[in-house]
Amino acid sequence: MDTPLIQVTDLAKHYQVSRRRPGFWGALKTFVAGGHTLVRAVDQISFSVARGELVGYLGPNGAGKSTTIKMLTGLLVPSAGELVVDGFVPWRARTQYVAHIGAVFGQRTTLWWDLPVMDSFELLRAIYKVPPARFAHNLAEFRELLELDGFLNTPVRALSLGQRMRADFCAAMLHNPRLLFLDEPTVGLDVVAKERIRQFIAHINAEHGTTVLLTTHDLQDVERLCRRVLIIDQGRLLYDGELAHLQTRFGGQRELVVDFSEVYTNVDIPDAQVLELEGQRAVYAFQRDGISASELIGRISARYRVRDLSVREPQIEATIRRIYEERLLDAPASAPITPFPAFKIQESP
Amino acid sequence: MFATLAFHWQIYRRLIGAQLRAQMQYRVSMLFEIAATALIMSLFFVSLALVMQRLENIGGWNLAQIAFLWGMVETGFGLMDMFFSGFDPAFFGRRVRQGTFDELLLRPVSVTVQVFGDQFVIRRLGRIIQGLAILTFAFSTGDIAWTAAKIAYLPLVLAGLVLYFGGLFIVGATITFWTVESIEAINVFTYGGSEMLAYPMHIYPDILRRTFTYILPAALLNYYPALYILDLPDPMSLPGWLRFVAPLAGGLLFAGALAFWRFGVRHYHSTGS
Image (cartoon, rainbow over all chains, first blue to last red; front, side):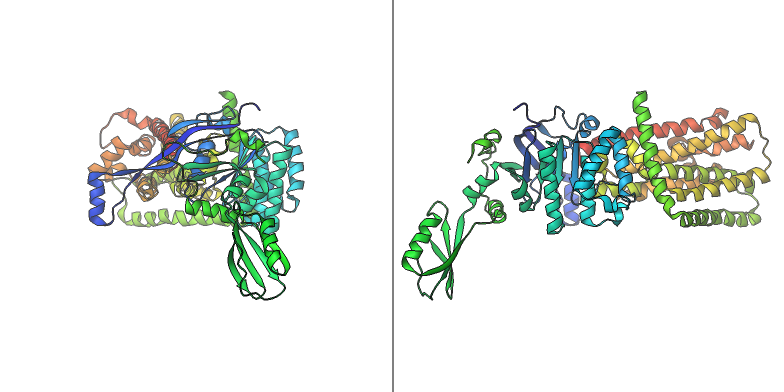
């Protein structure tokens, strides 16, 4: 593998926030004594992304995700650390750099609100200096994949959210960016529209080799698209590795649902905990590293008459929530932990 | 250098062109709006004319002479408001507050060009038409001893006014990088300033007159050129060449405003506002 597309080293962004004290005297005190608080929005994070990767960038609200993205896209100048993307230092050569990247924000459009979709595309063609032949080729490909034909001449303000997102994706890809930043690209969409967007992301990653950095709160996006995830909280990078590892490490307990052929009053089994017992149905919880599913099933069917059973895997959603809430990945104060270095992820099972 | 300039011009033209097409979709309502703006705005001048039937003059100036000041300011401000709408502090402040200014930074074109192309309001033609009508009135009722030099100077004075008011809009837009609560303060200079420039400077109290001559050189933009074109004496007895520096004063203020704008954009890069 050649040099990574994104190389982030000890990146930090600090803000001076003036401390506000309540009330009139508080305001006066602030005025006299000053008093700024240093907020470490991003605190010494390091990671790299290889060309062609599709990486999920996760974290609770206010974790520092958007500050990182703003630095990666050249909007913000870092306070410290190094940042090289595709050979550019983003904030130093903004206009040259942004010609090579694309961005889609679920919360707002980058198209011209009052213009028909096609007019926006034409403007972008001129702004990004896309050669006519390439423009025609790209447009033909994306309008078919994203099914844009029905509303190419409709003003953006009259589009539904799903249509607008599809148009925004096309707009972001018309200049063949090497790197695409996606911020909540499926927020507010219905299941069908979400799936269509996910298919498109997978397509451009596979067919165009576009590197994608995906920020989202929808973990189904991540599960469907990303092998690798970065987790950030309170400005620190807490995890960099495979999504699957996260599940095995922090997935916690699995559940076994058993339907018995008759009603039992006591269904206790060693190494498993009975969560529910109602009528002929019982739900057991068991630890991944305590007992295997087949072992547990063996023990149960040895004692009781079983009609049906099923194993419930914990939802990735629940796992990530547990990581945020219980701070399972608290990094030490000095350096952030990277349990699975970026370039070793291929070896993992 | 030339290639960049040509590219910027092309992008600007396309941005404006796309907006014109969008606004022209409602041609009839657009024409009505232009006409309504022109009519409503000219009511202000009509009421001044009525008052002056009693007063006969303001500070020794008759209606035709005041109409010259008034028409120049209205035409200049209207032109500015059409070309600089993207920098209108109220409009631009909303972009900063809602974070949509970031979109402009994500495109590989100078942000200044993009903001210039961000809004082009044809409706403002109404104000320009009104200004030109008042100027026509001034030219036809007053007796101006026209010379070739005066005719040549007129568009330069207009350009000076456009640059001056445009500079104030840019300063106002830049301030919104720090705070959006001060928009009213800048409106005092833009809208209030346009009102003030419509009357002869010597009617104002000393402190106002001095401020707008030496600090913000508004008097040089309209009043002094008017003294030249209308062949009137300078009650303040300042040097005669001050009558000819209007485009320079406007240009300098505009250049200063652009420098402040660049500083503001850099500040935005380091704080994200």
